[in-house]
Picture 1 (spheres, rainbow, N blue to C red):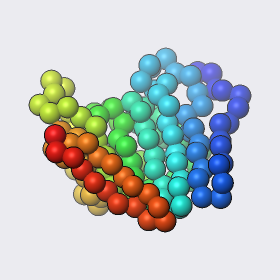
Picture 2: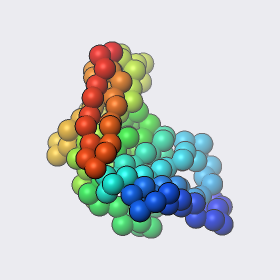
Picture 3: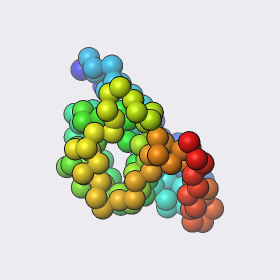
Picture 4: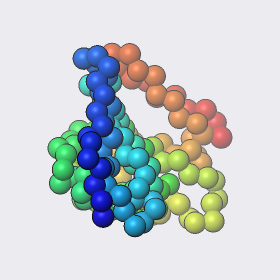
Length: 145
């Protein structure tokens, strides 16, 4: 496993900060997903790509991620990602799962959904497109599938 030399962080102003947290190269293609952390007006977003539980563990060890407002779930709610330890640690408010209706993989998995009992869940197969409008606060809007 190789690690990238540079840490990619961009702060546009005092209210917008973007970090790319996954800095290693893995044998598993899904684990090479871009994992992005976005903080806008102190509203925190975490985008997991298709990263697995192994990447989640490394991110927890490397970064202090707590009180995440929005988590875009890894790998469409597959049981290879979104582990309970990770979910509990980041203490999220809203879960967003991008998943096709009646998909052949059975995503999202019940095991993953059970880990989310403390957050409001939005799923593209049930709620349609999900938009989050941000000013000094946020508003969530869904568009029927």
